[in-house]
Structures are given as structure tokens and as C-alpha cells.
Length: 232
Image 1 (spheres, rainbow, N blue to C red):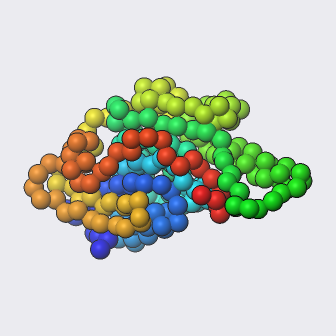
Image 2 (tube, one colour):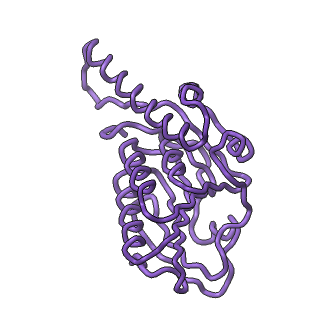
Image 3 (cartoon, rainbow, N blue to C red):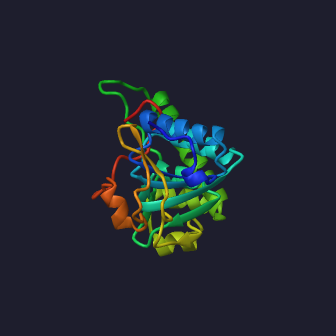
């Protein structure tokens, strides 16, 4: 059951989003965020570990979060890649742990199996990828202060950034070692779209190893690249 009351009477909520950005996880996060809004939460702390996913859901989440009348802080707690970077950019304040990394790359399209295209259709598909890559580049450029053309170029050659590079790039405001405050309720969204809320048991949940004890499985290899709606 998703909790709707802020922890210990606080107007803040901590949420962990773990997995690819697609319909189930995107809809689950939207529901949790909307419940926070309805219960009077004024500050959402969104911890993210994602290897990418679907462009539509990532862009939709960014647009939704950026327009909420509440403060959003985002945290890269492991790796944030591809369209996950767009979700991360929704934060008014953006943080990462020292071992975190980011990856940005151009939008990819996976055609349906056994589907055939003529030259004009290939050009149209190319235009879709270019337009969506440019749109994501604009979000990142606006968030970081980097020139749009520079971000677009960095995406097209696929760029990895560690914590220090991400801070220099403007993607991260602050690198932090500690995360959850003492006795904080945590709402977790998993890869399959399931949602669980963990109530404090008196022990401090603070650093990344403690998050692993709560069920966080750090990805060992890069994951699924971003793709337009309808592709895998």
C-alpha cells in the first residue's frame, strides 16, 4: 500500500525509483507523486537508479514534475542513463553520490520485426530520432546552462560523466555521501511497477550500503537505451 501521509508529520517525502522508465514504472511514480500532492507534501526527494527506457514516459514525467507547486530534489544513487537523465533534470536541486555516473546518447528506434520501409519512411524515422534527441538536449541544456548545440553534440557521440564531471557540467549541484535522514519513511518503486512503503524501525538509513539492504540492486552493466513510444 502506498502511504499518503508524510513521515513523522513532516511535509517531505522520500521516494526511490529503481528500474527502467516505461509504462508501469512511469504510471507508478505518477500515482505516488499525485498522492503526495494531495496529502500536502511540499518537498519530494526522488532517488533514481535507472538505465533508461522510453522517451515518451521520461519526457512526460519531467514535464509533470517541473510544473508541480512543490519542491523537487533528485538524487543519482547509482547510475542514471539515457532518458533517466531527463527525469533527473526535473529536480530543482540535483544531487549524486560520489560513485554515481550519468550517460547521455541519441534517441534510438527499434523497428517492429519483419516491418519494411521505403526511402521516404526511413527519412521520416530519422527525423523523429533527430527531433526527439534535440528535445531531450534542450531539457538538459536548460537544466545545466550548457549550450544546446554542445549538449546535442555530446548526446550524438554518447557521453559518460562521473560525479565530478557531472558537477562541472552543471548536471549535478552537489555530490553527497549521506542521503536519508534519521527515522524517514521510504516509498520504493521497483522495476515491475510495484510500490512499497518502508516505515522507520528506529535504525538509521543513511548511506548507499544501507539502501542496498532495503532491496536496491545496482546494475552491473549499461541497460536499455532510450527509444520512442512503441519500441523496446
